[in-house]
Amino acid sequence: MTSSSKLAQPKLFNRIVAATAAISLVLLLQHCQSRKSANLELSERGYQAPLVMRGGDPYIRALMRTISASESNVSRPYWVIYGGKYVKKLDRHPDICERISVGPNYGNCSTAAGRYQFITTTWEEMAERYHPNQHKFLFWESYSFEPEYQDRVIYGWLSDPEAWGVDIPQLLRDGKIDEVLWLLSGTWTSLGYGIETNSMSRYLPDIYQEILQEELQ
Image 1 (cartoon, helix red, strand yellow):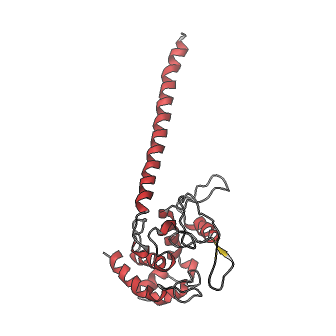
Image 2 (cartoon, one colour; image 1 turned 135 degrees about the horizontal axis):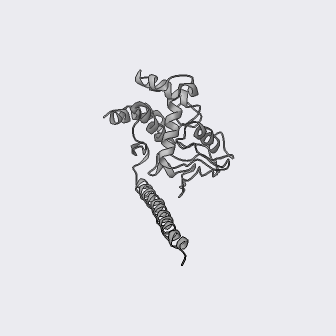
Image 3 (cartoon, helix red, strand yellow; image 1 turned 180 degrees about the horizontal axis):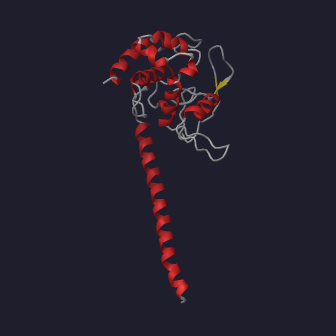
């Protein structure tokens, strides 16, 4: 064996060790994520389910949960799609168009998905602005639709005065929840002023107040 071969062996060994460590780290992270997702699947119903996102303005957090009271009042809100079916993967927006069977949009289909029932085009537009992971290397890559990212995107959207033309956090602090729900009803038509109210719509102001006290603790 030549001296150069002897020198090459430690370098090769170090590379193998480094590669093994990197692979182990990736597998560990995937395992943690899968355990987190499994726990979330057993979450409470609708607005009673806590947000996955940590921190933030308690007034906006309460509003987010209020939206989910009428949009995704089910036991696994982050995984639900329009019509009540569930998806198993959230690595991207499901983009499944389910037929609308009632209401003014009867016969059309909807791609609404997740806790806040983002349709595909709205998710893509808002993710470009507010998704915390903006490092897409390829133009066809999709933004992760995992629960934390659903929360973070809508949190950024609701907190942005330029997006709505008003300061929603300040309106909430001023006690103007009815005005905020009216403003948002053009986007989420189940909030009480739109064309698709449901059994939860009229209770939303009271639900908001209940959740707010919880979030302020």
